[in-house]
Image 1 (cartoon, one colour):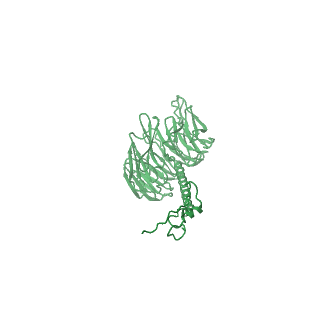
Image 2 (cartoon, rainbow, N blue to C red):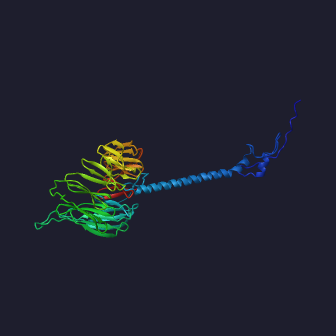
Image 3 (tube, one colour):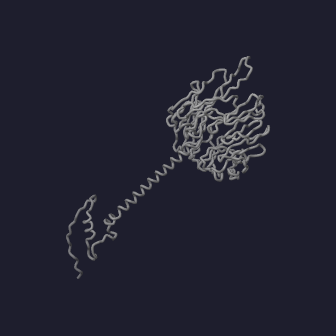
Length: 491
């Protein structure tokens, strides 16, 4: 006979709602309900003891999750802070704009005229215009366009006089004085009684960029051959009655003469046959180019080098305080601040917009080639055969442009990253925001403002601007499109 099977046994059944929390005592009793062959109650260490195990570990799991979320939040905040810091740094670089990640729009527009109608000073965009018959400087809030202050400078002359153009030059820092200058107009014709030619002077007005207050006014005897800002001063070149040239460095606010130099021989040719004298200056060196060129120390006015008649010569300062001296048929020399020769380069270095990411080397354009050389001794780093000219060095790459072509190369070895030929010649040099190369391309009905990835050339955005836009520039870290009579601020 088979073995006897135990009879059925009735057991109480408890219905528990899944949403209710189960008491610990019931759960433990349930898992500890020993069946045949069990050694005793479950101690919670077996795989089936889900309740006690989960209740023991869930605070740790939640803690780890909270820590992970907190760490991610901190990392995001730090990344955002670094991005803002980089954007601020890029916006402070002259000739660059704050990163424009999305297609911009015209935020505001205002009258602006002249060869340099927009400058950044005092945290504002200062625009020059003569729409009302008077040359006026107006400081606008960069975000809204609201006028913070306006200053009438000089009335536009009427018929019978030469045209008058006002230019303003700002300093490196926002609080630096704004210097505005213009040459007084001369009459286009005179009566028979006029025996002495009139030499119109150059007028200078120093303006506080914070409120538009006039800090000083002065004039330089004319005719003026050139005016250039150097730090807080102006370097002015004036033609003398004996056809010699006087170059002076004068305090921007008062006109006080810091130093003065007069050419030993006549440089001005009244017949106009010879090349007229031309002033070229920066913080380190001043060149009076022309028939017999001379290079001066911008700080003291001392003569660095004089050239004979017919000799061509130029100089350009370097970021480290040295300079490059170029003499026709001789070449270009890298020199330390004390004049010591420390190397040779093929030509004068090109001035480019830069964020400093490629410090330690210089770019030289020889016409059909661009070379990168070490700033210390002129040692060649790389060479690129191209007619394009360097315009910017940012984020480790070099942006070049010519006519309708934009070319971007690796700053370390000159390797081409991408090249783009636009349908028409671009209106002005590409502008960069550290993320893109931005160009304005004229069209039949509109001007296309196109941004391509700095490292890959991929189209990022394309915006249609009015067809009468003549150039797009960077002013105070913002994109500004200029027509013949207006400035359109983008953002």
